[in-house]
Every structure is written in structure tokens, then in C-alpha cells.
Amino acid sequence: MASAFIVVSVKATSSTSCLKTEEECAVNQQITSPYIPDNIEFCGQSINLLLIGNREQFDREVTAFTYGHSTTLLIFKRANRYFPIIEKILKEEEVPDDFKYLAVVETMLNIRAVSSAKAAGLWQFMEGTAKDYGLEVTSEVDQRYDIELSTRAACKYFKKAYEDFGDWSTVAAAYNAGKNRLNNDLEKQQGENFFDLWLPEETMRYVFRILAIKQIMTHPKTYGFILKEEDFSPSIQESIIEINTPINWVELAQKYGLTYAQLRASNVWIRDLTLTNR
Image 1 (cartoon, rainbow, N blue to C red):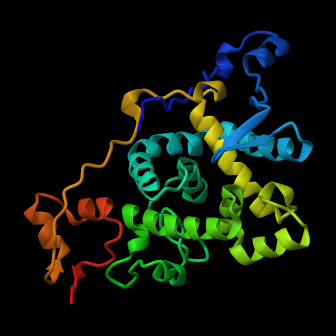
Image 2 (image 1 turned 120 degrees about the vertical axis):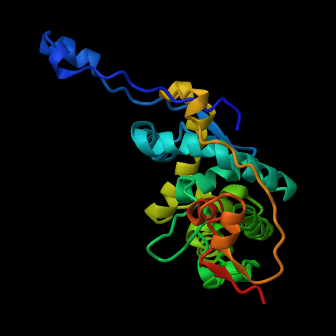
């Protein structure tokens, strides 16, 4: 990832050093409202943030990310590792680059994420949906945790949904609410895309969270975020090994000077100590 991802830490003032008037201390510790642009672009579409509904929705999410320092800092760090992989695949699959921010909103780029509904991996596929999109899910292998394969599966969904809706913002909303729900609401409310619709709060927040994190990650200094180059998660250095026989992962790891834990950390799709490989 380019070293442009940079978040600024707020300088803390200890209570012992604040031996001034209450008003002077308040100035030193002030919290300001984050910057809201007049419009923001998503997949080539300009969204007007001067409209009252759009502004309030965006304000809520950009404020949450700006002052949720620990989570947002982790996003910046992880992006250095995962964005280059995601960006390459999105380009190859002809899906707009902005969809990398959907992965951020889904999991905060936590590759091991599992929801309460058992959706898993970077793109939060349910088991049945994962299999529908060509991913293997067994007790030994779960490709929902494979960054490349799961990203390509997500792209299949995005492209099919775009054939249905012809609008990328609606595709993003459908990833959260489902294509049937979006189709019904577009028909009932006579809307052309997501921004014409009144939807459940979860879906409304979902799309505006994508917009908000894009704004912050594109303009980090504006929102007070700065990281040094050494703060970022190191990029992934791949070594591809073809395996066509049953394997014991512990023994394989030791063969390459690794522990089983180190092997699993880099290959989260491995789900057991062995691979039958029939």
C-alpha cells in the first residue's frame, strides 16, 4: 500500500500538567467536528452531501471513524497488507476500486472475522453462499478465509448484481440487504438507485460507512491520522507450494522452519492439522 495512509495521533495532556484555569484546559482538550465535503465520489458517481439526509448520515459515520481511534488505526495498518491484493483483483475483474472499502466496512480488514450468523472471512460469506460462488468449505479447508479466492467470489456477486441494478451504490447496498430487498424497494418507492430509497438503518449506515472510510483513508491528515512507515502491517510475501497428496500441516511447517501457528497465521483457510486431499 502506498505510504499515503497516514493518521495523526492526538497529543495527550496529562491532568497533572493542566494547572491552568478550567477554560484554558478545555481549549487544550477540545474535540472538533470532522470535516464534511460538499460531495463525495463513489465508483464515478458524485453524491451530494449538502442534501440534509445525506449529510446527517455521512456526518454520523465519519465522526464514528474519526474518533474510534483504535479501530481506524488498525484499518490503516491492515490496509498496507491487504489492499494491494484486493486492488489487483478488483482491477482484473473490472469491479470499481472503491469496493475495497466495502471489505473495510464488512470486517475492518480482519481476515479471521466471523459474525454471529457464522458469515466468515474478509467478505463475510455465509457457507451456502460461498459454495454457490465456487468456494470450498469443509472441516479441513474454508476458502472464505482465502484472500484471493474470496475476493474473486465477491467480484462475481458484484458483477451479477450490477447486471441487475446498473448502479454500483445499489450493488453495495444489496451486499448488505440482499438483492430481493433492494429490487422490491426500488419498485415500491420508484427509485433509480440506493440514494433514492428509505431503507432499514443498518443498510443506510452500511453504504454511508463505506463513503466515510473512503473519505478518511483518502484524506488521512484532514481527520488527524498519521502513521510512520514502520507502523504499517508488513506486506505478504507469497511462496506457493503445490500439494496433491495427503498432508500433515505440522510436519510441512517444520520442513520450512515454521511452527504450525505461523503457518496458520498466513493461511487462515487451513482448518485442521491435516489435509486429506482426496
